Image (cartoon, rainbow, N blue to C red; front, side, top):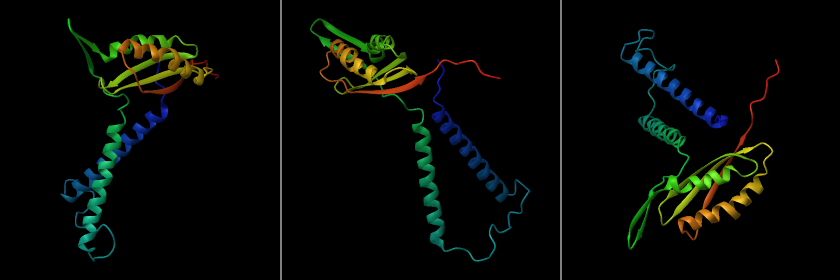
Length: 188
């Protein structure tokens, strides 16, 4: 299955292109200022007029630039983050201790959900700690799949079985639906 999440791909592409353009413009300005790029004279004024702006203007411009840069960096860092962090679970008993990787715990759940009518593929991540677990499910649904029926079946059948297997009273869940379509023939 290919990832057809085009808006996210476009978002990242535009962020990268904007960053490259800004880095190139900054490099050009610094190179020109220090005389490394002889295309422009470093002594030429940027704007007409000879009066310098008040001193507070430089601080405002620098502050706005730093805030905009930090916001853009935060936005870029948040792009690949999609799943909650998972941990290894430890079950202590009188006879010993059992460790279970969270990814191993949800494999049967994801395999079961993938067999539901209208579901092409299912991926699940069990995140959070053992005291406060969170289940994140990403489903690739077929175009004609009934999303409400799929969600009801997950909450009525799959999720209770997973909670019982993990001995949990409550397990909050988020579901992200993605539509899957077969690549059809193209008309030339």
